Each structure stands twice: as structure tokens, then as C-alpha cells.
Length: 211
Image 1 (tube, one colour):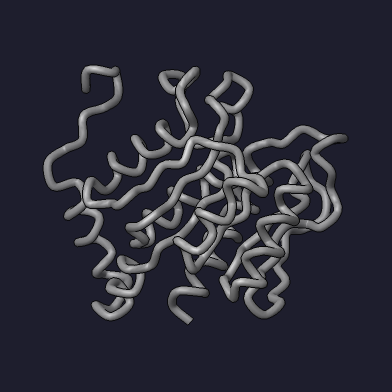
Image 2 (cartoon, helix red, strand yellow; image 1 turned 45 degrees about the horizontal axis):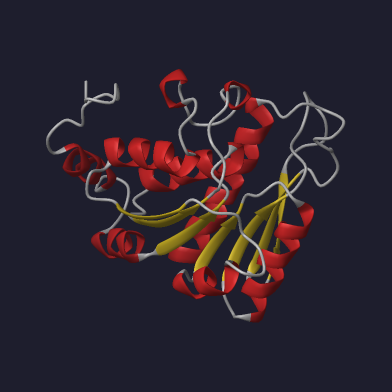
């Protein structure tokens, strides 16, 4: 265990991951995945799950943006553990990503995305995962990214139990995922459907990188 209570990273953990990925990707594909830089806007249920999935798939360069801290109510669907409660989400997620792959390159931005902060961050990543809660922030990020010629994966509709099946819609540089119907205001965000949507976001990013 490390001094802060987190599991210690085994020596060469990132090399173990890379070794395993060689069974699934060509050297050229691994190179593209390793060089790709992905912005994760929101480190909650969608962003934390998508980031870990992308890291497991060979992506090694992330910008993580979220102003919030981990709360007990987050543990039902987000990639955090009780030891992370009270910590900034971007720092807790960075810990998990580095545990998986110590070679990973991370930039942490513990701030709120808005008209003032977005312009300095947006151009630094050619690919974005939109994983924020506020509708106005979703719209701001997606519209500005598309106007800048960047690629975006965005999610909507993933609450409750059962419900409409998840899907995806590709619209040029934008991929939308979710069931496009359910509303988290009327149904709780639970791990199964949130994780489904996060998986579709991660898959869309991999398609941007590898297709």
C-alpha cells in the first residue's frame, strides 16, 4: 500500500498491459492508440468508466476535467472506491489510471468547464468525450468542438432499470450514444446502464482513432 492508502503500483505494470495488448492490436494500431490524446470532460459515471476502458485499450494520453469531489453517492456507478471519498475526482481517477499503466500521460484540470475555461483547453485535444451533467455545458462543449473541427463522443439517456436499448448515431465528427429517452431527473443513474453508455463512448473514441 502507498502512503495515502492506495494499492502500490507493481513494477512494470504498464509493460504488462502493453504486452497483453499486443495479442489484440498490430504495432501500427498500438502506436496510434498510444499517441492519441483524448479529453475527458467530466470524471463521473460516464467519464471515469470511459477513461478506464480507453486506457485498457491502449490509449495513453488524457486530459481529465472535473471540478467535483468523490461522494458516497457516486460509488454506485463511478470508477471510485471508498478510499477516494472526499478527493478530487480527477486526482482519484488519475491514481487508478496510473495503477493500470504507470507510463500513462495525464493532465489534470480540476475546474468547471464554461465560457472562460473552455477556450484554453479545447484545442489541446483532437478527440473529446463529453461526459458532463449540465445541459448547457454539454451544448457548449459539443458545439465549440465541432466548430473547431474536433471529434466528439457525447452521451444522453442512460437512467433507471430496463428501458430502451442503448444505441449510437454517427453525425460526421460527432457520435451520440445512449437510449435518447430516459431522464436522470426521473430515474436514478445506476451502474448497468451508465456503464453501457460509457462503453459506447469509449468504443466511439476507438473508432475515431483506428478507423
